[in-house]
Image 1 (spheres, rainbow, N blue to C red):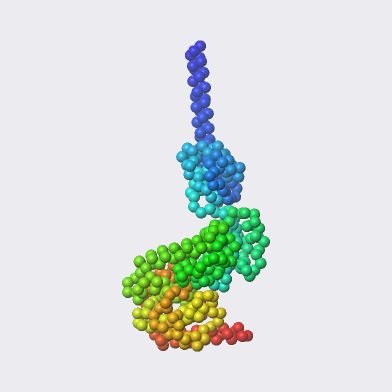
Image 2: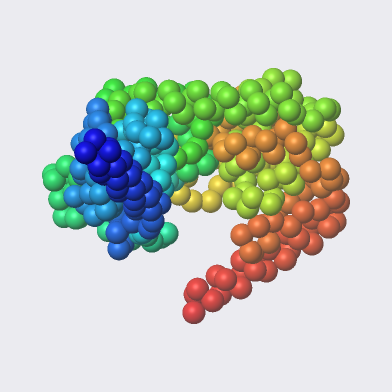
Length: 389
């Protein structure tokens, strides 16, 4: 009898082992197979959430086929403590290992909506975009100029509902510090805008900055200053030898002039070369943007062409009348303009003028420059004749 009982027990044990092996194999198969998500979707890992809570939410949202298999697989991989707070985009059909990789990677949250506050010379603009899961290009929700256009209902509704939003401030290159501060005053999602002090000219790095709603505008300006200090220090350390620049501040001043003279990326080092060659030869820079800055003190654009009397008037910024660089920057230059100031193109150009395409024609001699000027004036005359008709 005991032999019979032992045989039955052995048989039962084998059956149990076979069943467990089958369950393990099934679990492994479901762990690695494509998930049930039919379309890409956003998923939020709440702050402080544990694996049990996240697993249940993933199964509830149809991202994984089984919360228990996801939980067991995550523990087996020893990654149950690696969950990172944030909002993530999960692609359609993502397997459990792929989902786990995404929600443990961390990094910036991918919110469905992005509000970008653009600071431009003609005034700020707000762009509201929706990111549709699975699509590369965001969808435009609203665009408006605060203080000029009526605030769209789509924007106010998103804010009122507390929808997760990525807030950004984008600063265009070439703005003066006054223009940056004035522009920030219209940002209704920032605090402390009324008490802002205008930072030194040139000290703000044009870039796009992620911010939190309700954060302090002064802190944002400080981030811009720290970024510009780093950019300037790195470029100064890597500058080419023989430049007629004695300090990083002089380099920043030259970079600001380059920034205002051209918006064509391929031209920056050529424009830099013209000014460096002029400084080396003792020629005056003769650049209109510095004259304009001397008139406006950086508080907005001139809104008209320069008058002969203004070009003839001696001011610290009139580079038609003074030698060398003006006393300081005339705008906040981009990193590209700063690098161009310290690494000009190797060329003998000492003149340039607009060529009608948005760029410039460069010349080594006055005779060649005069021909380029004549060509530009002919283009201007033709445009005026056309517009007059």
